[in-house]
Length: 201
Image (cartoon, rainbow, N blue to C red; front, side, top):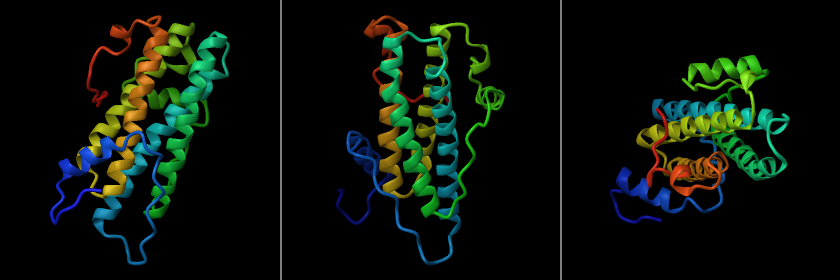
């Protein structure tokens, strides 16, 4: 961990990104004292991240249970869905520790499509025509998710939450690359066009 009296946000962010390969951290303990405005703000930020992760997870579930994908593509995407389940559990635990109320996941395809439209994602789960459409949709939602973490990392204050957000953002960036490889038949330059990611804000 970083040492020194005055740890800067940049140092914390650098530490968090460096820990991206580590296991997701356990939730912070619940504080006995009433929540301060800063803590309430942290809870709201985590709630927003959880909301987009729930949409991401729902999108994976719908695509993977459809007949749109080939068996190899389905096998390649299954671990990504499992990652999203871990993200959701980690964020849910941290939000509960902060006294926040978790958002509900989409309950139907039309509800998810409404959320996708709200986030300016071009595709719709209810209008997918084939494997390419499905992969483009998942890639678009992953980019929106990475963008949500990019914005959150500018504003989060708690070192534990900064580290967690950096870890999840790095994992979702890996998802982008894997989906890109499926979409562009393993062509790395098209699958990973940029060395750095900031998602779509």
